[in-house]
Image 1 (cartoon, rainbow, N blue to C red):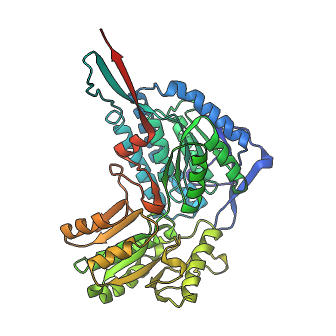
Image 2: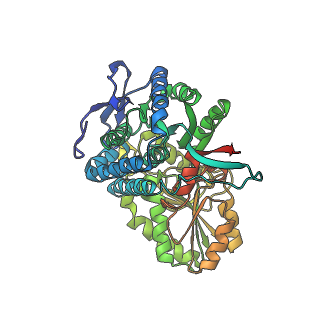
Length: 483
């Protein structure tokens, strides 16, 4: 399909039982590079029947895969990580051509994915043990076994094309689950290459099947997947709007959901912070990957005592880091971010830097990095995820005012506090309504050994390490009464 990042138009097939399925040319859909306007791939869009066949295959494979050994699962995952490292140039190229991601973000995706996969592989034995609880009957012994949930429907997004798909696949494999992955229609080649690499690493047939589907057919095919009796749980990462639909559909069919949604991540800059470092990290957090990350820094809250100096440093940091912004994945995503900025301007808001302008003329895919001062009222930018290279800046008079401003959001994913006082940072962090609080770091941060997930409108459940293993396993209680 592709080698060494040299890309040509190719057809991306469906994947079942470790084999690409024959292409139905009548169902081919284009993948268009936003930066060149050219079709770089075509993908075979699945039907309901294709989705159901993928589920049948995964259910059949689960009968044996659930009995696979810890050593077998670990060996496959580590071999997969080796292949991802070996083929790094190819994966950088695929991400770039499909999602317009720059070199910083494409390499980060590879590095973080490999880190996740290796850490998950290392923790399989530690997180697979059951217990023998005490029972108040002398003739009875009890056992609690941890067992795989079953077949998992994985729905990863395009913006962390490798990280978010790779973590979900690795966790399912590690726990003895089988999977059906609904690959993103915006990066089907990247997701397909990851699946191919897993087959090369020795994953048995049927343990991971893949479909991708055109947006026009997505609702029907996704409901068929969720409703299928083989699917025991859904792992979804995406927007809050789509998350509501997935959650409602799963509820209708009594399927549990692990869900990580959008964010409006705040970064608080206190009066004792290292202001140059804080400005640089806030700028990077707002701009990386054109702001198209659920962890992106969308709001900056600075203490009034240092606000004047921080504004100067922030404008400089935005200019210095402009090159990391890159371009949007599609004209639709860019248009949305632009509309939010236009709405801010129409509401009379001040731009500290930037404005609702494109940097690439008629192509209209790369927005000028922007900072908007003190959004309020009905302006969309107040609590709408922009998914563009912009952030709001607020000035507050106290720590409590900073906490209140940060918590004034329907979202609750990632946040940051910049301070040289650890006790102050921890105290404020405990009051923030966010799943993650990073002190003196970017909001764009996660670690394989720490829990990752949101509160409020950012979803529920936790990924990573033992918290992730808990999501993909369930307890079985067995008692034995002797003589």
